[in-house]
Length: 66
Image (cartoon, rainbow, N blue to C red; front, side, top):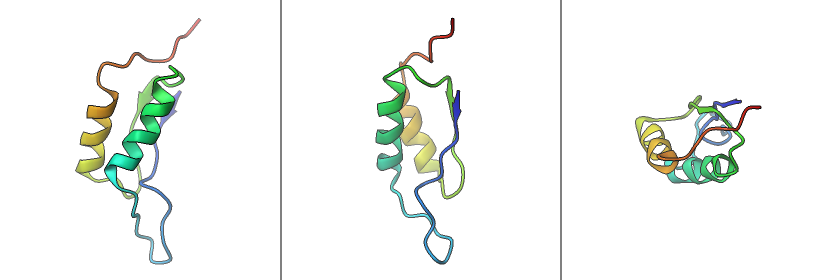
């Protein structure tokens, strides 16, 4: 399973306002359950989002596959 989230929902002008830490915290909660294999980033994500994800998910193991 691959997660490729946006940086929150866009506003009326199409801008995304979710902070990098919020995105990283949400994905870490899912990743600690070992339910995903890979993570990316999509609309509204910035280099800060990618860095926060990498830091937050460092050392976690991927989803178990049987």
